[in-house]
Amino acid sequence: MDQASRNDLKKASARTHLCGHSCGAWLAARYETRAPRRVDRLALVDPTQVFAGFRPGYLLRALPSMIRPSEARARAFLAWETGGRPLDETWQRVHALADTVPGRKLIVGGRPRAAGLHMPVLVLLAEHSRTHDAAKAAEKARGVLPRAEVTVLPGATHHSLPLAEPEKLNEHLIHFLG
Image (cartoon, rainbow, N blue to C red):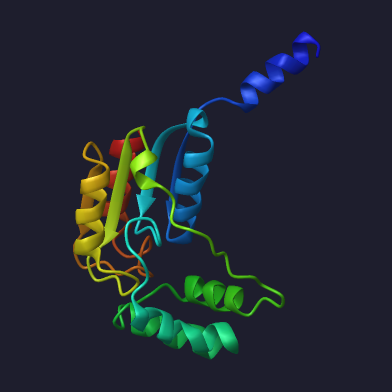
C-alpha cells in the first residue's frame, strides 16, 4: 500500500460523533459496539431497543401499517402516538410515503450491549413516548452508563421528536456535540 492510500485510510478511520433518533439511535449504538475506536461521542434520541423493549401496545398499533401499509394507516398511527399534537404536514407526508415504499424491509436485530459504550453518551428520551416507558429506559440507561447524560424531554412523544420543540432538543445536542 502506498503512502497516499495509507493517508486515505487514516482519514476514513477518523473518529466521529454519531447522533440518531429511534431506529437510527439503535443503529448508531450497534455501530459503536462494533467499531468503538471510530466513535468519539454518541447521542441517542429516544432510542428504540437500546435501553428498553417496545411496549406491546405500540407494536399492536403499528401492526396494521406493517401488514397493509397505506398513507391513511401511517397518519392514524402518528396521530395516536403523538396524542394528536400538531405535526408538520410535509413531515407527515414523507413519513406516510416511507411506510408505503414497495419492498421495504423492517430493520430487526438484537439489543446492543449498552454497557459496552465507553465514550461520552447523551440519551434524550421523550416523556410521553408510546414506544417504550421513558422513565424505565432512563433508569436502565443511568444504570448501565453511569457517566452518560440522560434527560427526559417533557411533553415530547417518540414521533413528535425532533420536530416538536426543536430548540430544546437542539440545545441539548449542541451542548453535548459542540
